[in-house]
Amino acid sequence: MDIIRLIAVGYAVALIVAAALNYVPGLTDAEGRAFGIFALDIYDDLLHLASATWAAIAAFCRARRRYRS
Image (cartoon, rainbow, N blue to C red):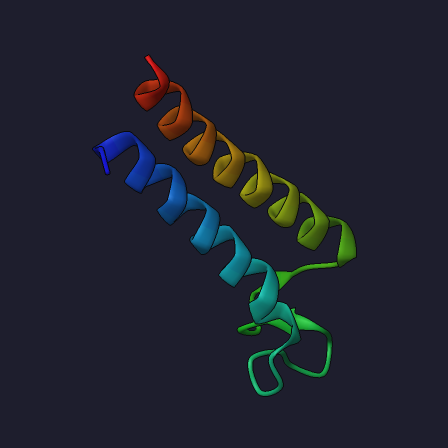
């Protein structure tokens, strides 16, 4: 696995974790802010998940094209 693929997979994992943390009880306050700082909503979560999907697809497509030749 090359370094670019590792970075893309790490980016995808980080964005999935960022989207999931908004729904963990105890990490959000009464106002719906993550860690009491970040006011997130469903649109932010969808953007995180779309970016994570893009990074995962890019990582796996790069690996497939590289070894095809």
